[in-house]
Image 1: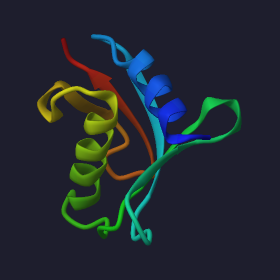
Image 2: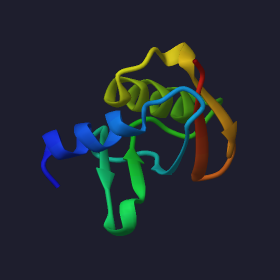
Image 3: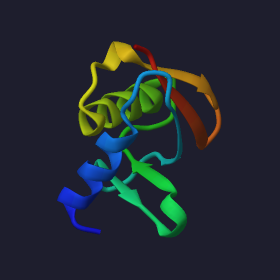
Image 4: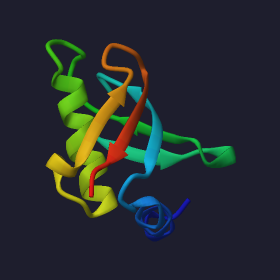
Amino acid sequence: MAETDLKTLLRAKAQAGAEIAVRVTPKASRNRITVGEGGAIRVYVTVVPEGGKANAAVQKLLAKALGVAKSDLVLIRGATARDKVFRIRG
């Protein structure tokens, strides 16, 4: 999927109260977001999953892609799991 298509898809989901489910892969070779078949969002981050570092990196990367502030993106489920759900505050 082209990067502009990805940004368009993610920004369409960026509405207050929206919940966004993602699958996280820590210790990746580079930070990136992909959308797989069926619309599943995968987030790859380079940091290790220790002390919430990976969660913070996912929050920062996802917030940038969605065009919202990091403080408006709240992790509501999956703090210690690979499958996470974020909610956009608004």
